[in-house]
Image (tube, rainbow, N blue to C red):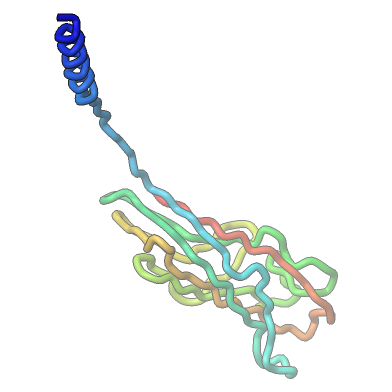
Length: 179
């Protein structure tokens, strides 16, 4: 009888273990995310060299700055802006100046391109050291590609004979925003 009892206990233990192996416990969570307006900008050209194709003062100094932007605006009432400001004027005595040009009519100007969904500025814009000037705008529900979209600035600086020979640098700071 002991062998039957041992066998019965063993069978009962195996059944109990099999039942425990199949026991499961589950739980859930609700994931919530708030996606808001957002903007990011990369200036692809760390130094933009302005050059002229003339030695007779007939052509301005020109150059291009390439940008990549990412933007997402609020669905219906959102807006976005891309602007620039000259945060450090051309340094050095006798050279060009954005804030105080040496001659009337001297200016650092630019035209801009902004790929869709942005709208680029129109016509020639005059750069400033005191105020941000526009490059592009976005309306409600605008969103860029995941890898970003392109924008650029085509610079033009008057070639004035009164500029003293030398190398002069200025800093343009770009700002992008989204609501």
